[in-house]
Image (tube, rainbow, N blue to C red):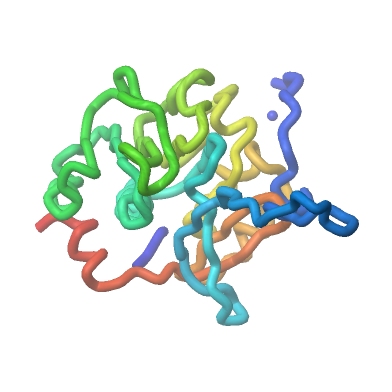
Amino acid sequence: MNFRRTTTTAPDRPDLMVLPVSPVGAPASGPPGPAAGFPLLHADTGIHLGSDRAGSPVTLAVLGPRAIRIGVLGESLFGRLLACRLVAVGAAVTAVTRGPSLWTPLRAACGARLTVAEDPGSWPSCPGAAPGSGPGPQALVTDLRRPPGRAVGEEPWTTVVHVVRRAPARSVHWQRPDAVLVLGAPYADAVTPVLGSDAGRLTASLEQGEIALFRPGGVAALRPDIAPAETALLRPG
């Protein structure tokens, strides 16, 4: 599958290439007290993206007991892939798109877990919750030019994915993303204003068929794994 600065003061944003990864649910130091038990902690849920150059699987955290913002630079088709996999891990997905007809096969397969609309309205219609409880996590996938504003998707168990060829300037979503996916070397110029020149150079070095995932702790160059059944759902007709 082929995927194919007038100076202003930029707001602070995390460096997705160098931030350390914080352990989730790390045990407290020292011996447990007499009342210590075995607490159950919610952890982020990841979806499989593909394999890196060493052949190791690469996953992306998409759901958790926090708000998650993901930026995708590239074709809108990848938004449908992420929506498909979000549904698979228990999310109720709302797709806000300029091309609703492109979502027809996927909507038919996902049923009530996928809603397609042309504007976000008052999303989410209900609070997000952990998988298996009530309506579950709430995810918004949009390929509109501008993503939703600051107040949208800030609650626990909500995820917002914005898929666009070039990130809009001064967008809150793109100032502090949890992860950025860049769908190939042609988008090197698009990622530079978002993550800096090092990210642009790395993206430019991607081989044909590779994409880049930038997130706290580092960056991965990978080849997406897409099943034939998924391909049939992503391309209408």
